[in-house]
Length: 154
Length: 154
DNA sequence: GAAATGTCTACAAAATCAGTAGATTATGCC
DNA sequence: GGCATAATCTACTGATTTTGTAGACATTTC
Image (cartoon, rainbow over all chains, first blue to last red; front, side, top):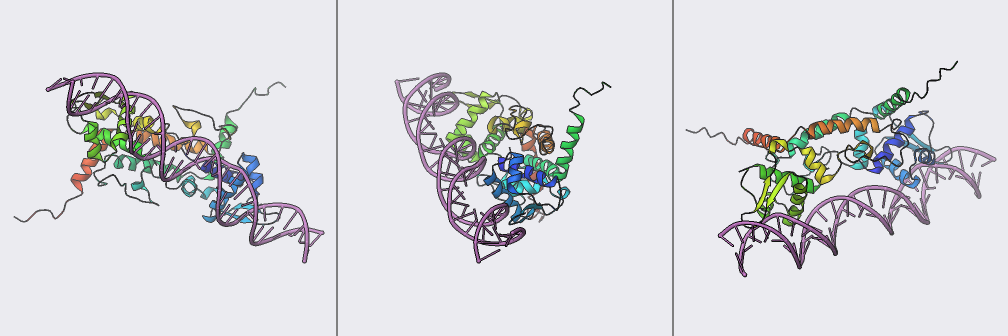
């Protein structure tokens, strides 16, 4: 399970991605529109700012903007910023490698090889899926599915 | 990251899978050989027993045995027993579906579609990889890699 | 019946998660 | 310059989960 914080982050970025790319959007606006606790969202956006995903403007008419196009922000990079390493084992992390203290020998570890495959499968999806993809898939699903009572009465 | 407990469980099962299928192995033996705290391992093996992965014998000459061949125990089922649902979002869990309370509408959710793919990729690996596979991969790696100074001196 | 095993329940320290609180700083507008 | 409106920063807190420990109990074998 990903953290609640990561969910908020991804949905906040989706909110930013919808609508004008040049028009800053305020924390409170995003918070209410996406059901995110405002003070919590502040921290999240600060994290995303430090990592170069968004930028901010202060003062009146201030707010947040995407720094990159939504099609260039992957789920993988956001998850890494918010939740930390993606790997299922510390000894498989690219960004935060750490040897398992109880395990002796990574070659002889019976679980590492399998989780290596898991990690690769995960990364393949996470780094090929962008915020833009998420929005696109959602819109597509909404356009197809809810065809309620096909207004054919004229 | 999977939990320490899940790591222990998978490595304990690997230990059971190595060696005689009819010969019970004691908790303490597994614990020391795999660097697992004994009392913690007790609980883990009990969980695995309740779920029909292993069985136990009491008294002298007692211990634990695999109930199924190692080639029929998948990483996925073990992980589910020890760590709970595999899905990255509650609304994507097969065994423990729960709607996200903040999200309105799963079709319109911008992140659910992407994580659905992540979940499928994960499950594909986890349920096609068995304890026997883990052991096999480890043994293979050990046989290939450490070729130290190729004893060719006669 | 004693010794060796697994079984069960409860507890507890540490870490992580999911926020809250409140003071501070920068910006635009009058 | 001063006020309103935003973001920024630091610290704290309550709940939950993780990673174990402790100790009494039950069962089997010799």
